[in-house]
Image (cartoon, rainbow, N blue to C red; front, side, top):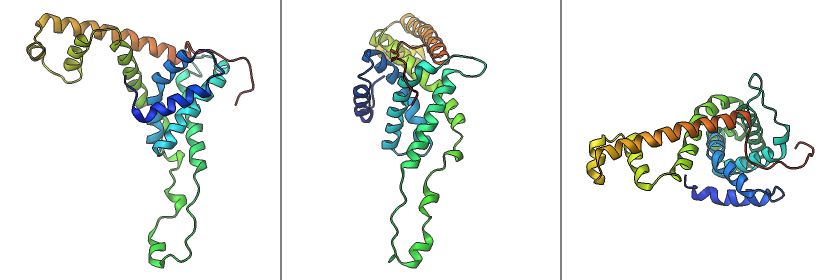
Length: 224
């Protein structure tokens, strides 16, 4: 999964802020797995690009500080729910940082009456069903994360055949003709990658629900 250019500064800044935790590679893997989910939910909650990037950074920082506190209990608290709650508070933090526009006493009266009051133009976090948004984004982003990992484990040709068959819905015969390969190779690539993807998605789901990650845990400290 290629990084979106606009999130590269966010990742670099975030990793520098996590320098007190030794395993940068694990934190980078965590970031690459979840930033699209956090960013997408923040945008759908009404934040700007810059605000959404702040939510990504602050949420991952909070996970780093509080991961020791997380205890998996499928009946009451999955990692998915825990991460949603952290993200919700970071979104609310960004909304609270917004300032009303300065008053313009000499503005034309018609102008003044036609404009919506600033406070009404600020999104209300309560007006967005974050749980519904989160659930809608969750599976999609786990799928994307799984695809990114599998893509590194198969040849470009195999992935291209799978992508054409599954994403673009090309008939196998057309793929074989366009790429100059046998029909059997197309079916084999599609089947092999589909199996790998299912396994990787299950692995990610299990890790996500239980909060089992390779990210290093800091020494005990007060929760933020």
